[in-house]
Figure (cartoon, rainbow, N blue to C red):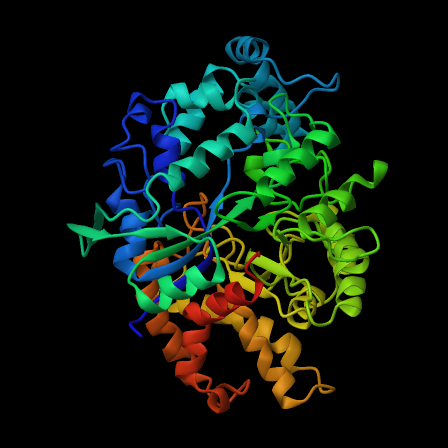
Length: 542
């Protein structure tokens, strides 16, 4: 079989969809589809591996050129929390006019000076940046510069007309429109300072069944797209930013379960409150000054009316006694869940269900994760209030968004899967650190070895049990999710280079972790595509 790659989590439509949505070209079907990539990509930023906001990392033409044949495509309507900012003590958003007047009068700088004299640099910076923490023109301008979207799109995203559920359905149709259609597209990149361009022709197929998936991967050159959603807010939060009624939530879940192209998993939490469960701290310190993650931050499931667990059980297709219902299962992705929510999820669903149904376990999925350097969930929970940019357990990023040994063990025991995220900060690279190009492979291997060592270090296990941890790791890049990528591997076009580097590092450490016994080539194949492919075949919703 030709070389191929699989990615457990990326956003192949995000770049085009959000640039053409609320734009005249949205009405042009020749452009408003996943094959079209706007020609405003910053190829210099792409070559340098800078943050993926000004170029596409995983659009359909790049998937085809790179041999990325299996993608768990994530639909992720942009959350309003990125535009709304903080509330004041009265529960209102900071009004732009008041902040602008204070800025012009010098009061903002006076506040900042007072806070600096008090030694409170964060408060000083906060006073100067509160002008951005609202839905006014200045914030929209900054968001436009940051996200490169048109002002009309930004205005819509910040308005009460913007509805997550409707946006998801539109993006679903955006992909559905060209599924199975042979098409051509253009790939642009820069190599050694020279701009390159190539036309590619092929097809992508949205996947309906495990049989179709087998046919796509083994009998064609097509790209297989498996539908996922990042954030239950898609069905749980209304245009006002408040939860919709439980009845509407369950009605929408029923709709998700009957889609023509099944929803494989949903990342339950994301950056802001979804009314269902707690989310982990995810934005760096500076971003926290202009966006507010605090509602339900680091908390557990919504216990009023048992709503959080009811929603989770409904998605999984099980009743309150943990018996299977005769309906399609939507798997749960634990990425972005707070450590507290993960602890409750394991204790109240995963462990009792899997003990009761050992032949059909619910797998623990972490679609785009990394290791925290911390042993237990309780340790992550205790440290969560003190998380900051420099909160590390060297060389790992110790925020509770990352995995403890306890999480890794749950993934392994449940025959689950961890996708390795290609984000610098989450992978433990400190702020403003300079990483030599030939060291990026070591950043990734630190993550892989840390995950493997959790199981390998358990002397109670047989060798065959230890070896099976290698079946639980794959790529979960989060490309086109606005990440700051590992600079050497900035797009799917770099997966080939990643595979070469991975092979070299595994050869260097072949005397450890059963690498030589299993085989370097076999392990490269597992991580590059086979683990994700076989996981999909085992667990595809029926």
